[in-house]
Length: 142
Image (cartoon, rainbow, N blue to C red; front, side, top):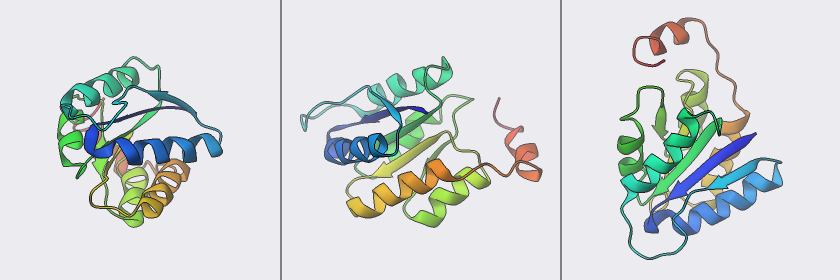
């Protein structure tokens, strides 16, 4: 599976860890930045990542900033994007099962790195249940 990853300076180090964990499970990664701890603006990197999903170049994305909030707000501006800012494993699982989230947002300053990696793996492995959940998603998403 081809996954786009992006972060601002607050999420840079966690992004690097998440990338390594994704490669370990056989994912193809497209990293659109940022590439250091130097201060940047998260909306720029959310837009780069989202554009790859909207153009069908990547199936899913993982966006990381200090809290995950800014990235989720920036990503959810686009109708076909369902970005879920998750802070635990249960939320990550439910964002896939019930909401068919195609972007996972993480807060590097709010999560233990090992838990974040576990959340990513569970998020990727959890299928969308469809059914009544699809009817709800159709009301706001393509």
